[in-house]
Length: 287
Ligand code: PMP
Image (cartoon, rainbow, N blue to C red):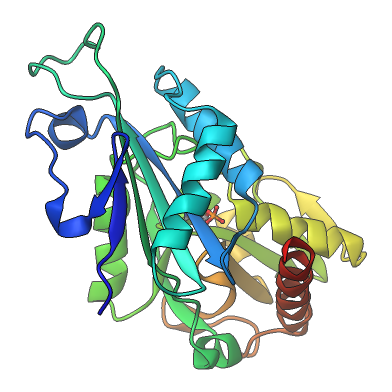
């Protein structure tokens, strides 16, 4: 098997050789942010949008961006070229760096910059065909969910609750309204209308969420971006999750009850097909 090559603070090296000091604030406080970019046929998908979201996350934790967008772009292409597989998932992480343990920000410390590549695993065909089961939970995470923070303990606990229940994801509500899932955005179809929660501090502004909403609007699917109540979710004909790795999937069972007729709905099948076409078109144009 080929060795994974990672990037750490200015150098490329095999994954096994990479070391981080234990006083890195990412390790001590979870003080950092990250991004995950899907790469199809060696072309990063929506890289400018991911870099824009990275900047938003850095601004959200008051950390200066250590690299310019052209530098991030060059490094992304570099790491893709150095790793095997045409379809990859590129992970970036920036932490506030290494300093004596104290909550307040250290002065004059260089951020830690890390990038790695993993094989991109897209959903198996049976999940696309049959949909997935989810449970629901109260969203107990912090109030800056728009920041893609490496402090993911809330998301990990919620995801594990789903795994313990033998399902794929957990659909969350805060104060009676839909937020998102532990590692994906959620939207629903009610009476022929696609309903998506607004991008605010309660959810991650998903790149796939944007793609799906753009495709729906071009296809003249009635769309409302607004708060979606728990009752509306539970009475929805369709529920979808979206993320860079899961793309768009139908939730066909929620808390053990069938969603709609228990099969992926007509609108899901339409948007899923549009998403696959769109991916192909973008990649052909990039090639
Ligand atoms: N919400 C959360 C909490 C996530 O972790 C993710 C996956 N990064 C998403 C939504 C979906 O974002 P994207 O479409 O950019 O992958």
